[in-house]
Length: 406
Length: 74
Image (cartoon, rainbow over all chains, first blue to last red; front, side):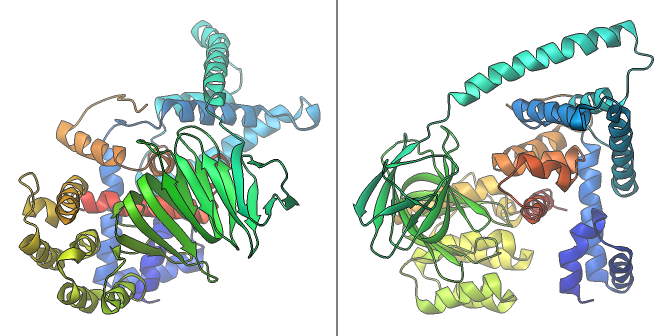
């Protein structure tokens, strides 16, 4: 196995998702390779760190409630209405849980299930033997409280749905869910397909509109205030905001782009590679190095089955674009970083800034200096913070550069 | 809403990790918490993110781990 192959499999290895043969191959490699050994040590340190810190954060309460409630209902489901299957299902769940916790303990130490989920799992799998008076009381009150809470949440949540959305045809015909659309509406979960002669505009409630160009295929994944989401599968769209606080996210390949106001386009080619161009405002783009902001005048690529690449100026020189491509997708390494620094002009500094989390400490020093030559960091941004790729400092410096570039 | 539940150990370490976690996009944060902190498996989490396949959940967890390791200086 090569270091690259091991690097890809290390997370599966530590999560115990590999078969015996793969596991042995990795272990053999780790014994002889300091670099990969350091990487697994780093991952183990990571688990020790998150394990050593008590539960300071929980998932949003409504999610935990929904998750826990569903776990209970799943564990109590009685196939074909036969009561006799209850004990069997309980036993099966208990075995699965023990098996999984054993795996986790071997790698990460004792289970960290929080009080909320641990209580729920205990209640759902522990049977009804030897329950004390207090436990009985809990047993009666808890479902009532959970049901009341869930009903309230359900009503609150239901009010947020804003489906269907209006479609205005500019030319041609609209095919919604495979059928010729005559209502001028599209609902959550439905797809919109346009042929070569058709162009349509979708009105997004409280946000603006999305122009869907010819030969495009999109899906309205979620039509809900605070969580509107469209998936672009083929073709291209142009989003135009008319709201101060936009409420739209776009799914491209497996990346979720968050609209932060303005105007932008998403183009997907035949190989399912996407290009995102921002004309006005900015977008938040997820990345393996943490999310970054894509400013007006900049673009980025999201290749099929890859994380979003480094942003670069729409008008940047082709040599710079090619080098960024090599850096992102062809292991350009140190050479690419050096080339990008030498090609980049003052207006390309946001490209250099976005590269900082992805490069070595040495290269961070060089990038810091290169950017600082054009845009000295604001007082709240320190060299040390940038060396650590501190997200907040990177954002503050990004804001400063964007402001000066305007 | 995120909740503070219990506290012990070094407060600054906790605050730092908490801040990093709070900066994660909501969906990434939930998936990370359920998998790496709560100990649920990908197949247990998957039914709650029906628009994602398990590989996408894995990608999010790996991305979050890299982000946290990088920012924790590990």
